[in-house]
Length: 280
Image (cartoon, rainbow, N blue to C red; front, side, top):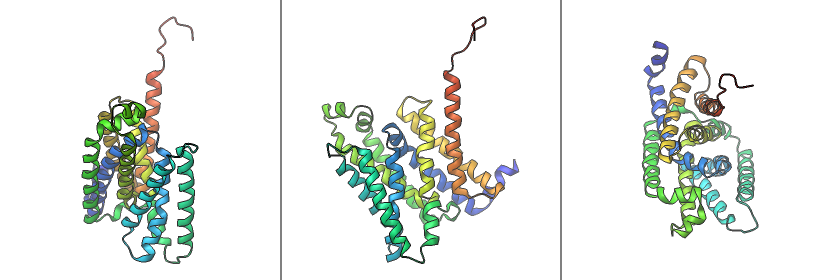
């Protein structure tokens, strides 16, 4: 079992493990609602649209997390505003904001000769360079997300399955949708500098989607997603250590791979069992 334990004898790998666990829990809470509400495209758009805020913050000396938060929050507000237009679908609004903000971000980056290294970190993260402050920030984001998820659970459930029924019950689905966008924003912003914007999407979607194939109750989906996220983190770090691959990318790849294994298992489970003597 030395091959499993050896990587975690190193302090920065242990830091990465704790960061991955916190990100997994955070993404399980927010990602479950992303999967149930069919908001995957929005999550992808928000993670890429943050480039504009991160680039501007980096060039002006502002904390990149603040830039990412403002950029992702602006996209969430824009999606909510465009969603009120009766003749525009939500996907259309998301696509327009996605293309516009990403284009502006690339334009800003193209005018900066010193942003190449930061752009690499933005896209792919550096889970092996996690600091104590990063862990504290992730912990605070997790506490906030968990509190909102618990307090808004009833409204979120109604919103996910029948927004009109939610309105009938007086649950105010439109403000609830804004709060839900806020949860996704917090999860993405808090996680992107750990595993990168291209890879946070794997943890945000993969584990909840895999758990949703087997669980029927929302708390069970969240718990399953959290467990799968932790398994992805541990497995990804071990594989990365021994194979010399990028840690964040390996974690995300394992998370996506677990989804496909879960989907295959669900398919085999649903296949009708052929009894003896039954024709093929």
